[in-house]
Image 1 (tube, chains in turn cyan, yellow):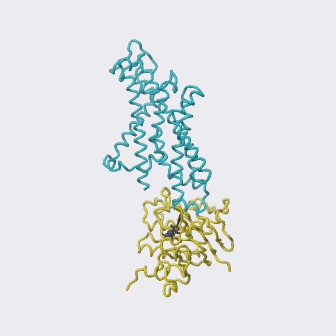
Image 2 (spheres, chains in turn orange, red):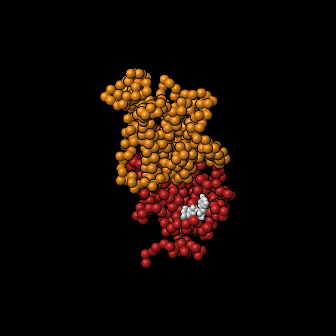
Image 3 (cartoon, chains in turn green, purple):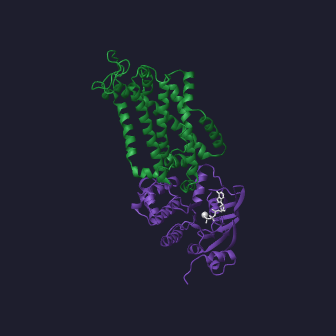
Length: 289
Length: 257
Ligand SMILES: Nc1ncnc2c1ncn2[C@@H]1O[C@H](COP(=O)(O)OP(=O)(O)OP(=O)(O)O)[C@@H](O)[C@H]1O
Ligand SMILES: [Mg+2]
């Protein structure tokens, strides 16, 4: 999460040359992977060949085969089916975090950046303090206070992620404030609120969306970590994080596959969100430059 | 008789990097009803600062802006005061590439202003928008276009139409033709003269080029480091400049031998 500086998606032109050659394929690949996972989550019952909870103690830790594409886990559950169903929880959690923190962040950042002055100083100070607390730490704290499960970590992380959007929006709004087109709206007689919400916000929203996309990956990683620690989703529900946790025993037995499959899913998704968000952000920044 | 616009002793000092810049010191002028006044001066002489104070984008440190006998507050309160101030004075900025909202098509940009300032709706409003665009030589074809598809000259016409949509009594043009090609400049200058005759709007025309100012204005001020150093009719300023600085400005104008 530290890599996600508030300006992370704004002006990074280092790889501009490479990208000019690379063309669009990296964007399409990332988007393709994410669409695939999203479709898997939505149509899980149609795609998964087995009940993800059905155990088969006569067929545990089986390798990949025609019957079990990705093998089975230590109690004989089909890993592929669990992966497909696990996509639901794994994606819905971060979606909630990103939606909530984006709404909150836009609100706070817009007020701070647009109003400026004392209010901005106070808000900025509070955001600085919030930056000092890692999202994962807040999530763990929330669990100790409110109990295990997804709700407490999601609420805590929504708050912990808010500064990333808020700071970005504040910066973009301050930059917009001195733009002649914004000054023109003011001179024409539009109210300050109208200018901020209906004129400035739509112009900066593509960059906010890019930032939210990057955040989605990090939120997924953090929530998977919570589940891996046994603090997130509780059985019988499972997500990719809890699948990794479940397979610790198997890994010790020298059967890493059940751990590798969900780990790869997490890594691929996080990278896809990251690449997509950064890439979109760069393009928008370059287009607007 | 009360003037259309009377500016009295406007002062503005900026503090940047520890030192102070007097961007405008005691700037005063009068613009009569339907008149046109030029402001000339080199870069950094305080023209933009003065314009921004006049339209209410910048708060003067001291001084008054009086519109038809009524002082304009630099912080309008409430909707009606805001709209009233907008109808008093509008501005066209220098850079047509930055002054239009990139997301809003030309017709919509004008229409939202008409919507804010009039009760016109539906077909009536559409007609008004097309009238305004027609006044600046743009048609239905441009109405549906985003600014990025237009040339600099076309964009500046949009900016003028958008300002006129408010129905202002004064139109400030801050280097409004400086970014344009010479032939396009002439077109826009002609357009401004036509609009002034047609609508009776008072013009405050700012430029670093006295020759351009003469084209539009009968009278002008010469500014230097925030101060008005000379004022008079543009003909007189051109033929018999009193201040040495005005002569320097004149020498900068290329003239056919
Ligand atoms: N926001 C600001 N902060 C600090 N200094 C400023 C600011 N705006 C203008 N100035 C300074 O005030 C002085 C007058 O600037 P102004 O933009 O009014 O000049 P100008 O006549 O419009 O010049 P130009 O022809 O380059 O547009 C300059 O020295 C400028 O550096
Ligand atoms: Mg200027």
